[in-house]
Length: 206
Image (cartoon, rainbow, N blue to C red):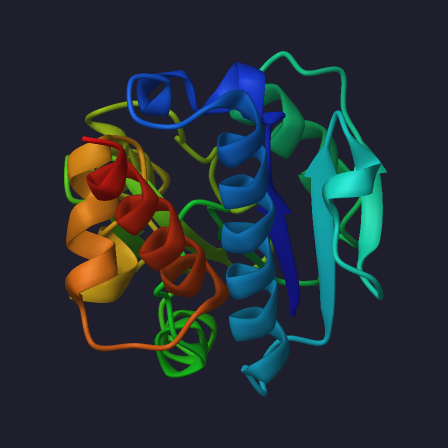
C-alpha cells in the first residue's frame, strides 16, 4: 500500500498558529510534523512507499516520492495524487499535522478488512483514510464533518467501512492549544522536542 501525505506550505496551511509562533517557527513545526508522520508511515509494515504531495518539494524528507501540486488545498492535491495510484493498489492518506500518529495505528487502518477505513480527527474531520482500491470512494479532507461524509459516501457506494479511533491520531496541530496538548503527552517525536524549545522560549519571553 502507498501512503500519501499532503502538506501545504507553512504560510498557507498553519495560519492559526501565527499568534503563538513566528513564520520561521511555523516552518520548523511543519517540517518536524512531516518528519514524524513520514517516520510512522515507514515503520508500518503495510506501507511500501511514501508519497509527499506539496507545493514545496523541499519540505519532503529524503527518500520520499514527491508530487508537486499547485497549492489549491488538500482536496485538489489528493485528487491528483490518487490518480497516480494504480487502479488495483490501495492507498493510505495521512494528514501531515498528526505528529503523534504511530505505525501500529497506520497498520490497523491499512490492514482493515473493509474497503474503507477512516481515522477521524478530534473535530470530526479526517486525519487518515485507507482506501482499497484507491478509487473506491471520493475522500473528504479539510471539512469539519469529513469523517461523517466518508461514512455516508461508503454507505452510498455499498462498501464496508471501519472507523478507527485513536487519541494520538485524532490530535492534529492547528492551534496554540493543540501545541500545548501535544507537548504534554508521553512520546518522543521531533515535533515534541521542537515544541519543548519553542514553548520554553515563549514562557521566558513573558
